Amino acid sequence: MTGDVDYPKLHLGTAPDSWGVWNPSGDPLQTPWRRYLDEVAEAGYRYSELGPFGYVPADAEVVREEYSRRNLTLTGGTVFVALHKGKAALAKAKADVDAEMAVIGPNGARHLVILPEGYTDFDGNLVASPTLTADEWTSLLTGMSELGRYVTDEHGAVLVFHTHADSHVGTQEEIERFLDGTDPDTVQLCLDTGHVAYCGADNLKLIRDYPSRIQYVHLKQVDRAIRQRAIDEQLGFAPAVRLGVMTEPPLGEPEMPSLLAALAALDRDLHCIVEQDMYPCEFEAPLPIARRTREYFATCGLGAGRALASR
Image (tube, rainbow, N blue to C red):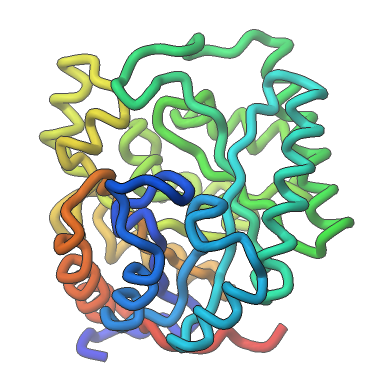
């Protein structure tokens, strides 16, 4: 540790997103999954998310063997949902949760990161309305609370909702409406610092106003100039990513030291997963960035190889 602070309850990890991975298997633009796992370990991390379902083979034993071989610990998996669409979408979400948990559950991961369906496509075109009706909000909030209860009761896991750019829960007002309208016992927050900043919301205010809901973190920074270009040119999120809107720390915002201090003040074990959207990227690009990022966070008080405290 080279910094003046030490946050033993914040546990640094990374994710396939930081290696340019957005899709399941079969995408030739993505870093192959074995190379990803090799480079995570080489970069000095000990925690990793699973990534899009099917990127790493959706087999619990394969995941166990491949992670163990590299001394990696799995922190969680992701499921995309569209609960504003009603009962059929909720039923699909439960089935997708079952499939995800069949892989991550036997490997000790307790956090299920739930991402909302977006309203733009890969080219930035609108594919749905950017706003929800009152009935759609009701479906989203009641459906998420029910899904959270399902995750807890059926799988003994924690649903952590991930706000997202170009989705219906991204701005400060939308995030607060979501948190105020969902069950605090079953729906927690994955605080993605980059998406919050990208949408003009306030990370520190969310930590201050909803401290008990912050149960998982994605560490990410936004390049302010590229974000402004995306606004000026009305670009969607995916085109903005291709321009480099998500940047390695400490080059962007939010400012990390004060953010990490606020997270540490929550005084609970938190996985803090580096997620720098880079899709698509050259295969040689992620590893040196991952090393520099780990080294930067070490100066901020985050270690990359600590075991979580016993629960």
